Length: 116
Image (cartoon, rainbow, N blue to C red; front, top):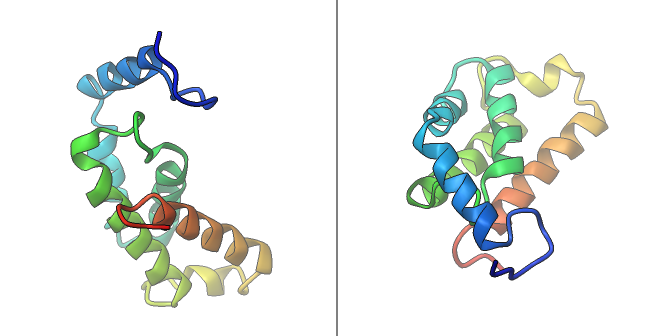
């Protein structure tokens, strides 16, 4: 086994396992639909999935950059109050909710090509 890091996905065996997983799953499609949903609750759930799974060797490589860009844009829409449901207002702009979403956005943006 070739390993290049300490994360669970940073080795040949795990990367191959994830590759096989996406061959039988429509999760990447459903996540993109969630990011484009009119329901802010669904959008935030999809952002969370992206924050956890949209990384090299885990997410399907052919969809990674587009999914990351869509997730960052979705997080920015909600953080800027540009969503129809006004998600943050529903939570009375609770600092914990805002901080969590901001953290997701920052983590996702850091994985984009050319990011720091």
